[in-house]
Image (cartoon, rainbow, N blue to C red; front, side, top):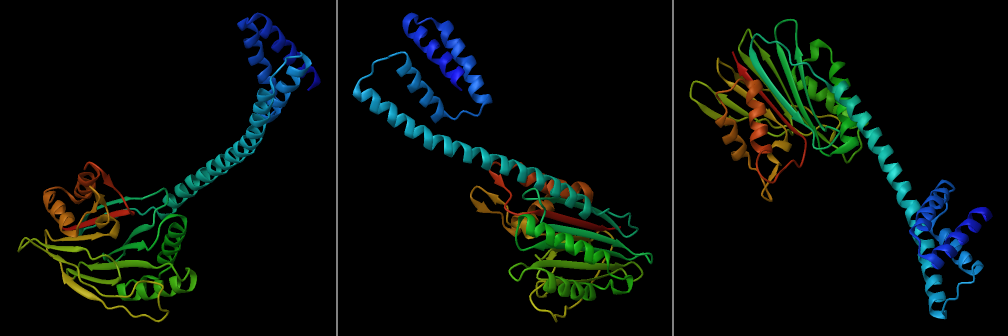
Length: 332
């Protein structure tokens, strides 16, 4: 850097003598050379001090002390700046990796909403962050039966997303003879208990509709209760089903419940992210969610779920606090 130091000292001397701004411009140019050579601010100040000595610029003792002070400050600044840039690069790399993982997860967990002779179906699932800790799945059996699963990891982020990927794989591995809700939850409970960290749990609701009997059979593993709508009485009721969340105990049995379904009846399934949304610094209640569901009853299930979500999302100061998944099935 001897050549650059000599040029810098000459520019400094000429500027002091003439105050010609052309020398400031040339100083900017030589600064680009310093940047290309990774010269830190502290080293530039050293060059400046050395240049002052070479051109015999007289400074007071106080000014000399002030320059020493600035030099020490810039040494600390340079170290902090390097660390900051390193952290930014690592964060950007991590963000890109999470984005790739989120896209892979979305593709892997993608579930086709089946054409059903029994139900019109609407689904919306909005992740709280890039990775979704909610999961839904449909199973259309060859005998006309329709299965639907909705699950939620107690947690967020990458660990929750990985757990849901495991649930998807496990559901895909279930033999058709074990599609009964009680059997599915029991099998998945063993998988979660053996493979998921002890501080993570998964809630799940699984239902199967038999068109020959117009009967919905369902079971719950600690999942957020949904709602039934009886078209004949025009009344809503809560889906009551008890069961331990997946992953707590290895040997857990689940109780099956039954509900006759008739034309116009609704099955409404959701995750707790729907009732944990925040609005004006408070959580939205289940009663409010149900009122909004009632408001858009005239829509098809596909438009119904979108209208419910948009109703809340358009509220001023609305804030998602968890993954938001809502499923509505309307009996034909």
